[in-house]
Image 1 (tube, rainbow over the protein chains, first blue to last red):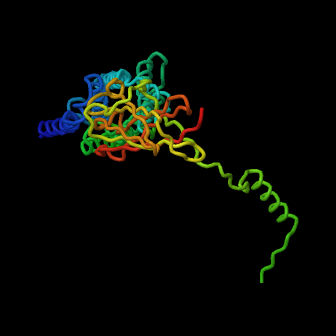
Image 2 (cartoon, helix red, strand yellow):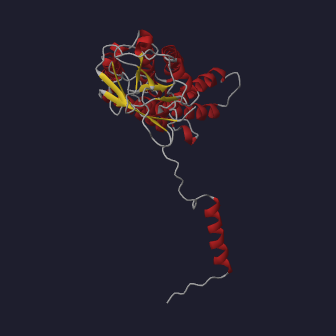
Image 3 (tube, each protein chain N blue to C red):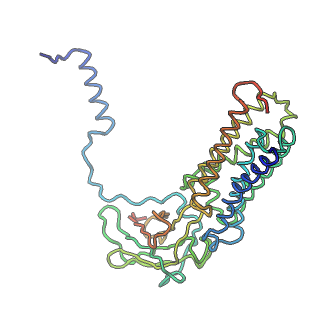
Length: 202
Length: 162
């Protein structure tokens, strides 16, 4: 029974990640974009999908990846998120430098871009904090609240960013992925009881 | 019956309010300034390539960019004004030279240039237009299409002498 349950969870997660990426791969817009621009777009889509895995790992919901193993994978996926966002921004920069400069300076005419930039800086800050955590001897509680707050900014910023864009992602699958990311984040936060000051059982 | 009396407090309050109204300019009579010039839009000049050639059509066409050019103040139509147009279309990125072209306004200050279908890029289906010929002040516009399925887009210029 546990095996079946585990298989179902992994199957559901695989579908949740694969469907929006596959739908984007069928976008008509791809025909009118060069490989660099397409790569940049998909790096963003992959980052959005990876964002769904992070809270699931943090709360230990994924079979076989509870506790320490889950945390190690969470860290690796965090690094992949940073890489994906760097590829996303670099590819867009190559495609249209003035547009990306405007976005990074918060003077772009597109409302969604600022949300993306905020999420990006929150992601970089999270990575930095995770990397320096031991060296600066961050208290566990401080680390936990800081990491969770930044994670919330990343999730909210990314979801709004994605929803407002008219791009290669198919509308319905994009909305479902964003909903799942939000739901997983809220569920994990409630489960871990980050704000209550007590550690939850995993 | 209610009666309304001026006492010191109401007088000071009313006087203060009146003074504030006048000083804030709310009671200045309407000025006949006429048509205000169009300001450049944010991001309007992105991927601008100066001196795009005047063309009959950009690429294969199928999409219409049109608009008017008028003079600030009296709103008189400006004939023979060169408007430069570019966008991310089915035939190229904004940065590509072949995505750029220019046209002139007719006697009524109207311009109209056929170009390839604009497709969403950087999150929005949008076009770029420029007036940059020197006689009037430079203006860059970046209109967004209401729907990316539209096959036309309009943008209007009101120019002030440089």
